[in-house]
Image 1 (tube, rainbow, N blue to C red):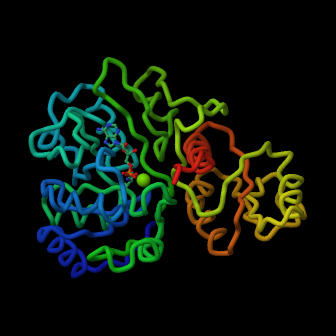
Image 2: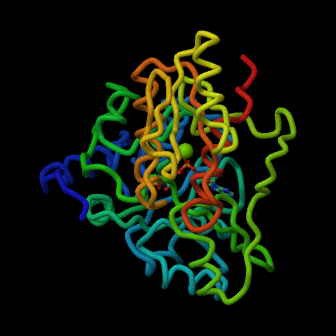
Length: 328
Ligand code: TXA
Ligand code: MG
């Protein structure tokens, strides 16, 4: 169970901040979000400013229940209803056609909008008290590691956020799965907390996912979900040797030691014992990256988990974290 630390008073205060056009950091089951009134273009603009996010990068509108879906989008296909019914509240985001309530500022100018119902008692209480929709990207600076505790949010933004609601550490730990249901065939735009296997079991047909090819087109996917330290991905059996080589070259190396290697001695600045269960790995992932940054690592050596279940989302985030840095 998620530890709920926000009081009824806090919820009321946060709802008042949203009504006044302010920014509220809120817990969800995936990661903490940086929320604003979805219908207030000025408040939405502040999210982009505070995050340092390009205005063309669309946001997710969080709503209080599946029954509100038609207030925010139009032309909802049967597949979307089916998925909403099975997975909401939960870590699934549906991309649908934009309804007139959603300003173009929130969608980066797109005629589609991403919507989800978060599965966290504090988020749901806030949405109920506020009454409207809350646009919320992950509460981190653009391209950086997403926050999974209220303290991560405070460390990231300090006074730039008007109110931080503390709902304890996030249970899922990676962002929602985004499914585009606007086309003839639904497709996964971002793997996340709801697994591909679970979606396919409900839909009854296979889904396409973004390329998992290790071959990178230079510059195509600038790094995202990235710690300060450079992330380098190697084959699991090479982890110890690569880490020690980098250390001998003078790096302050952090190692993600895969579960089968737990206990293997490795000469490195810091070692994270990767949990054997993918649910625990997903829950801990961003915290591990933040910890290695705090410990002063300049290089993180990791390997990709099997890309099934939550392993697909973990591998996606590690690949993006290791992607090319945007040119300064
Ligand atoms: O778990 C989550 O989804 C968290 C929590 C706070 O709900 N939110 C989150 O938001 O991860 P953000 O802004 O960090 O990522 C939203 C993603 C972006 O990659 C964006 O491109 C995509 O959603 N997105 C939003 N609207 C879209 C649209 N209309 N079409 C395609 N992609 C969209
Ligand atoms: Mg994000």
